Image (cartoon, rainbow, N blue to C red; front, side, top):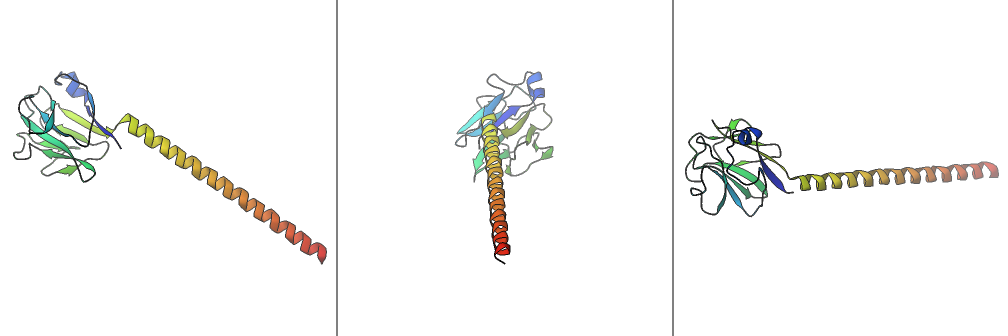
Length: 164
């Protein structure tokens, strides 16, 4: 399933986003770093740059590890100055994300929402609808089979009574 990050309205309203899109579809092969500038970031990370003095040079890193997206405070070697919150709770270790998680640079207006990408959500909904439709068809078929069996049994009972 594809996931995306969406900058919170407070981040956008404060004009903290440094250009680019307000929503980013995450690529599992890429590591992302929330940074205050483009120049200071961990090697090999794509920077998510916000102009906010409360955001550290590298505030947190998002990585796809062991089949899950995870967030880590700081740059991997050094923690951020103000800390990182996941759903309002300060994190100290590498933490897995779930759809609906909110990642916040503490003491900042910068927040990001971790969510299923619309294409992935639509595909998942279509698959669920197809599964539901198939289950309904299967139960209808089973109902017809059951009715046919009951009808055959009734005919057999009637034939036995007629012979008697």
